[in-house]
Structures are given as structure tokens and as C-alpha cells.
Amino acid sequence: MKGFELVVAAVLLVLSGKGAECSDPRILTSSPEAPGEEILMCNLTDLSFQISGHEWYKGDKLVHEDKDGSLITTYNITKVNVESSGQYTCKFLTVPDLSGVINVTVPPHVMAYKKSEHGNEGDTGVMTCKSNAYPLVEQWMWYRVSEDGSVQAIVNGTDERYFIKSAGNKTELRIHQLDIEKDQGDYICNGTNMLGTTGATVALRVRSRLAALWPFLGIVAEVIILVTIIFIYEKRRKPDEAPEDDDGGSAPLKSNAGANHETVRQRNSS
Image 1 (cartoon, rainbow, N blue to C red):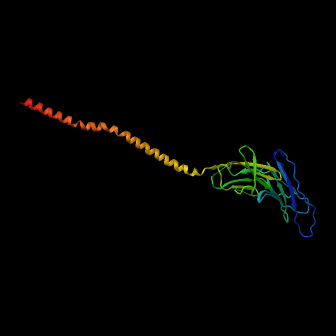
Image 2: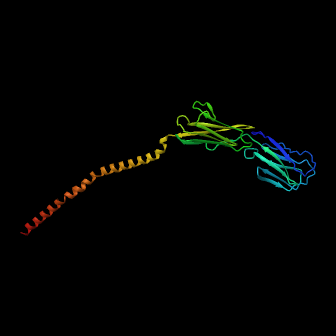
Image 3: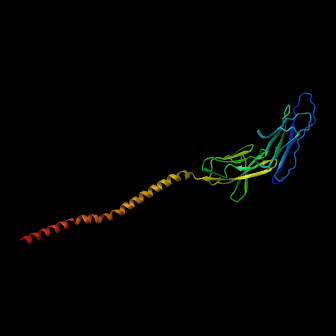
């Protein structure tokens, strides 16, 4: 199958009454009918069972059921990928029920929880990767990418600040006491199962200890600038008020003009 290697392991468990005899059961898988398709098939070879239907499960989820009494039941996977990989169970509705298991497997599909992680200097940095593919990842590895492009493996014990915890399809790298000079850069997590190895890259960014103070310092700077603008505005505004004082000083001129007018009137009357 293009892009994926499909490994199908099938086991059919036959449960019957004490003393009953039956032939060896088999599960057969067909070749894909079209690129990207896969038909899962279960074939019950014992003719002594009365079949009232079939059921197909992906994990614990029922994905198909019918009332057919055939010795053969099939389930079509449209495309074999990460989402469709997993453990499928075909069940023959007999007395008792008979079931078989088919494992649809693909290489790991490793993804980083976050492509970029941030941490403050002196704190603990955490980077996490996961894989949703079946089967589970058998081995996880972490690597540090140096400035010159070389890759260095990280394992527990090489540096007391590094701690790796892996379980199934999840792995986590913790770096204690982050150092902005030593720890900032790219890290690679690789997952391996029976079908291959894939990886993902996480960029770790370490902030300075003073990073938390920048918002506060920004507010202080804005206040200082605002006070300075107000001070300059008030200082330039005072000379403009001088003409108003001059207008007030011209009042005596109006008073003298009135006195002169009164003198002229007295002369005319005489």
C-alpha cells in the first residue's frame, strides 16, 4: 500500500461447549481493490454454527453490524492512515459468540503538543510529543540541535537538569533551571515502532529574568512621557497670558479720556 506498510495479524478464538468438535478456524484478508483501500475479512470455517449476524468493532466502538448468516464478514477501510489504524474485532453472532482480531498498523505519526515552547530563565521548561498511530511507540528519543546543525542525543543521566518521561504514545522532556545561553534552541523527539521511525521538532525560547518587568517599565515610561508633555505645555502657555495683563493696564487711559471730555464741556458752557 503506497505510503504505508500494512501488517495484519489475525487470531480467531472459538468458544464452544464441552466435548464439541470443530475444524481449525481462519481469518483471511483480501488484497486492496483500489489504491488506498483495504478490506478486512473474517471467514468462519466451522459449518456447525448457526449465525444470526455480524458485528465489527474498532477498539470498543461498534463500527458495523448486520443480520447476515454468512460464514464470511467484511469491513472496508477507505484509507489506511493514522486515524484508521488500530485493533479491529469481527464478531459472529452465534451461541456462544465467536470473535477474531485484526491489527491494522502504520508507522508512528509523531506530533509536538506545541511547535514552540516558552519559559523564563531559572524556571522549568517542558516539551511534549505524542503519536496517535497503532501500534504504540516502542522507543522514544530526544535530541538537541546545536548551533552548528549537529544533533546531540539527550538521555536521563547525561545532565542532572534533563529529565525524560515516556509512556506508550507520549513522551515529555523537562529541563530544570533554564539557561538562556545553554538551553534555547530546537529539540527533536523521535518515536519508533515495528514499522519505522518519525519525529517532530520543538523550538524552545527562553526569556530573560527581567522579561516580567517589561510591562511595568512600559507603563512607568508612558506616565513619565505624559507628565513631561503636560509640564512643557503649561510652561509655554504662560507667556501667552501677558497681553491680557496689558489690556488691564490700559484702563486709566479710558479714564483720562473721560476727564478731558468733561473739561471741554465746561469750557463750552462758559
